Image 1 (cartoon, rainbow, N blue to C red):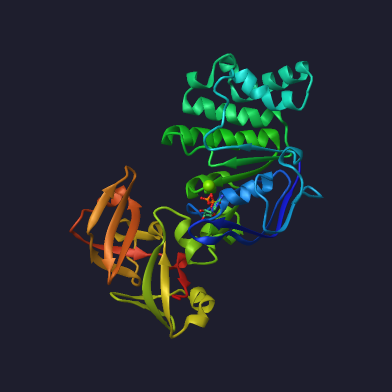
Image 2: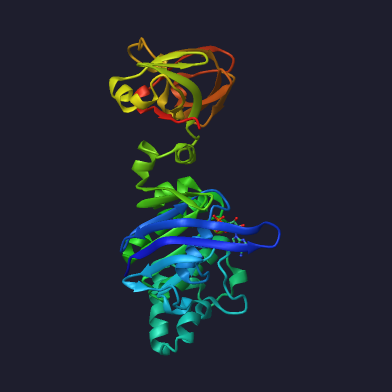
Length: 361
Ligand code: ADP
Ligand code: MG
């Protein structure tokens, strides 16, 4: 197994209409040996291009790619000791599943007995033994997805590359496959680079996550770090669901003034955000850090917002509540036990120990 390193990678495409498009701009990172690293970001941010440069399917404009100790800038994809699983599975329709699984090894002139043994092992790991003599068209989406993973496993590569492998599956199957992929990672002890636009998939699968936007790496961190300490507003708004609320505000000593309220910040936040004193800021607060005061034993004196709710959505155990603060619409996620109703006045407590401030520019 192996680590993967990007050193100042730039990738430009020549686009007929737009001219030069910079898909990846000066990306540097290291994927540790046996790590499950996830690339996440909106569509078009450069995730697939980055993965294809690891695979060697795309050549970087400048910079270096290493797999293990080896500089692989000019190494052909088939000599990089990687296996890639694509979103559309890319199975050969005229071959049986067994032939699909063995195809890569047959091309490498692996002896038949060895190919059979590897197919049987992968089939057992993925519980697909009963599918081996079928054709791809006879399989469901989830089964095809397993075969695509199986085809990577039989190659026993140093690095697995996954490009949005679950996005064609329905929601329930996606959750099930997510758990299976985590188990598979532990079992194989492999280095995995996994690309998705879905922040929930990224948070649940990744040991570390690379957040990308517009071809640039925004932050590389564990799921906990991304959630607790996003390095900018993009990351803060991308990680978490519903996303963090952003409210226009001004900081004045320990007072944070929004259009409709004044909040008193805890001392450690005042110290942390000293540089913003007297300035316009963006006040970030996550929906789950807004609480319905009815449920609190003791009514907090500060940081309570009295408002009328515009909309209340029931999620079962929780409610999503929507209300305005000046021009800013705010979303809260509170326990269903609060029994809040739309159009009724409520008091909401903002947990400012969890708030963040951002530069508005
Ligand atoms: P993602 O996988 O994050 O959705 P991509 O890596 O596919 O993003 O694309 C990143 C950017 O590069 C996009 O602007 C896309 O249009 C552009 N791009 C990707 N491949 C090509 C190509 N072969 N030719 C021109 N532009 C491309
Ligand atoms: Mg993509």
